[in-house]
Length: 257
Image (cartoon, rainbow, N blue to C red; front, side, top):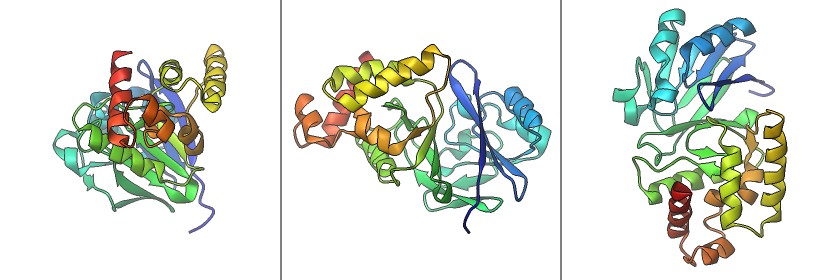
């Protein structure tokens, strides 16, 4: 199917989360990407004139699945989530693993397993719309903390996301970009694309404007967590030829930053 567009409504919620409502006009179906704040999601859907038909959970953390039951009670929606965390996803109806798909009207999301932040974390990739909802797997200039998985697991997940088409828009779940930029320049100070990006981020945030979504090609050039396979960065981190060790070094430094 071609020329299927999605209307994506983004709004801030909680402290630094973004909420996303994804509407497919032909069917009238609307997906809530995660549910950090049920009342905000319901109010925003009402404001847009949309009814939530799907909840697409990326992982189990309460700021991603905490509003599931309230939204389901209000709308009768179907809740989709990671099979690897099904026991922790409130109200889950459909368990998803890599290779599965989710239909939203005429649009279709492909499921990617991206564990590391949590063991069962998934991402929703809409290839025709060059769009991916990545939860806490990757951020603009950052990635999620490795809470449940291993560094090797997380690097493999990021490598999978790195292989998406470069024009893919990454819709991540938090506005962490300015803090991520402050760290990134400490490990990659000679990257002019990064310093230019950091300047743009500061200007955006000074005006109260969002920095996400971000394009994958921009992140491939600037995000140190995605560049652990770059020989110059590997040498700078003291782990020449070892992408996993380089990633682990960068992630550990960020955890202490």
